[in-house]
Image (cartoon, rainbow, N blue to C red):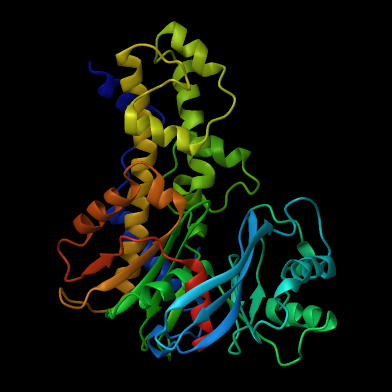
Length: 415
């Protein structure tokens, strides 16, 4: 029996099978449509009231804020008369709420402190707030809940733009200040809309977390054509292996966001470590290598990806070509499933975008280090998408460049 077969049999014995991304995409599409109709669904399907085809960029400067899971970024984006963007006064600080609990007032005061240097530079703030929000008609966003370990529970339920503006005005900002809220998937989508004219657009994020947004046509599900944020990471109706169950049990919110835990950067290396440690416990490697793997306390995704690129196991000090081949197969199965999930999610969004043609494809604009830097995830996603859509008249183009979230965020000022 080959080393690849041994690894494959081990994975199968623990319920880790090759994911049927065609079936998953159909299930996700059904869930998306349920959410759009107000029926029970895992995904939130948040309407944004933003039509990217109505955005016309002109000469203007705006302040851009980007609140992520770890970092808070701020800068000024200036567009010239041709629509070319220039970024200035960029600064990155820690995301408020990541180093201890904050009250509602302290949370917004910390943001105000981070952006005080930009007072007077522009009278519009475009705020990429990468957490589930209900977007209001006026462009504000009501926070539905924090993720990514942000500790500021009093902020949940607040209108983020309204609260931020009030805090800034109290600190000397002009009362005419306007604040626009959007999600990072919307920012990625808007950036894609600036790269050319396509029949429709999708924004996809695979970084620490995972999410997708697309343009819903007016009709059965929406009265007005607009971007819809899916909150795809919340989908949980998919097969879970014993390894997934072990990872989920250790997570901050067991039983939730199971698809994100199978494909996003925050979880892939932890899942890989669980798999190889279980393999070592069951004697899949040589005795010496089993002992070495058992002693590994942590593993990062870059190490996993680097090993897959070079098959060099210096970090693990794994000896022997056979054991390195098994290690490769186990790691490769983890990242390959991530790509299959990406294809399923994007494929469902492509179906929901409406008609396309070879001459007028849908633009898929992606962002995230996990998607672009992890071993073969991007190329395999394209491959599996082509297989998924081979029998359908659906055409797409995944942009080769990573979506610039800062520029995409600034574009919402022209909605």
